[in-house]
Image (cartoon, rainbow, N blue to C red):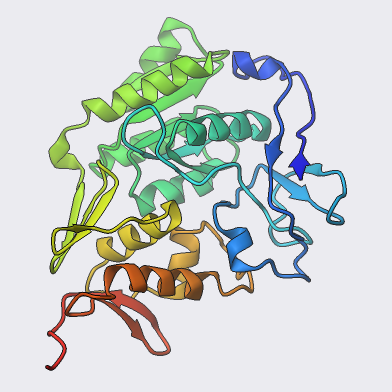
Length: 320
């Protein structure tokens, strides 16, 4: 069934294209109420976010967009993309720190349609915590945020020697405002209102400027290799085709190779769930991933640590 987001003009300071109607998006038919857990296959491909939540009251009901963070109430949050490769080069992991939920939803959708993995923080404190956790290729940050100012977040990054490229968004577009933002540590400054095409071009330009030595693009564990730039996986020289979510799961496991990764860590870093969805989504994907990277190869690399979580590490060959 199709879920139609409402047509609503955006106010000043929002992206120019956002002033028209927002198109509809196909969603799988499944209930999102916390009392009826969705099956793992239905949740796959959706990423929760604190911008808009779609409440399905029955299988063929019309959808309502509920503003605000509702993940801990009656509804499950769902997102508008899953980070597939698009036509704008290699997929990037982008953090958007923006308190305007409608503008954020618009930008997130556009970034994901361009093939990037886009994540959202709705205020300065949550944004600062996400930045400190790291792992982003580019950070897009609104200058004026609740709870903590955007420029202070950028200044904190530079003091920690975090050189992740930062694009600052602001309704303050005078020369002095732009100079202040750049001197605070921003790499680029875009005044509102703006065209999304320009924002996307600036984000991708920032990623290109970043020195390759700053970004770990190739992970290796034994004879298993994952290339973040080409979005490919090989084992013993053989291609291993993975779905987008499987790729992200393997990427996170390999990034933490040799360490136990808990179910909570996977929910938060691979699915962006900060609550227990009460599904077997992790078990299903671990099983699928194991069948692809270990079946027919020796030694096995993906291990279950009973009572703790999972670990990927090079091991001893199976006994003959």
